Image (cartoon, rainbow, N blue to C red; front, side, top):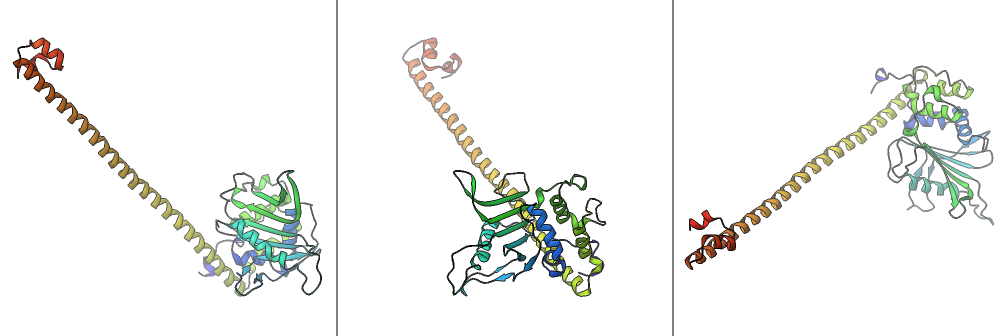
Length: 317
């Protein structure tokens, strides 16, 4: 893929390179802080963040490795983990809970007496798909540990936020909140050719400046092109799998339908054959009885009454 093939003005934030460029670098820290403050909507205000190592190993060599898209902490030491999930994953909620164990365990103080007091941990999933087991039409889900009896939050230091991007449908004219504007940008950035009039907040100055492909260095342009290729290839793989699944389902349905039709036809044929056979047997039995009665000298009318045969059938015997 070459740079002449690019037609977009701004990067696609669903690509690994673009997402980390916009939200995971010190140069664009202002963008991340603006997004998080819009997400929390006044529940807390983040003034600064420090980026942490995104690659984590378990306590033993045999433990599975975890690599986060963006991992940071705010000025209060609270941990914030952000995952941009580009393709559908069956157990994404399980994965996000598994990932949450790393920033929790890292808070243990080694070599000292520790009372287990934890700083808050936030896991944010930006999903380019809808969760299968969530029926709500809402695109945002905030999850905490809850007492199922009182329906009150039992522990407020562990928060999961899931953003189902396909469920966000607002147009530029319908953007009411700052968070709406962030959702609009994340979903539509790669399709925009100009900065929307509704996005006039200062933080978007930096975002659109950082996202403009024409301003990239050769190294960044190459890295973005490669990341975009991976993203498109992934989408093609998913689309192909879906189409194959549909085709296979139709084929299996057709075969099953034919098999069921054949079985049903055979069953009906056998039933009809048996029905005809029984009827033929009954008729032959009636003829035998009629012949014996006729030889015994009974009248045609009497024989017809006994056997159910017509007078013509009896006369022909």
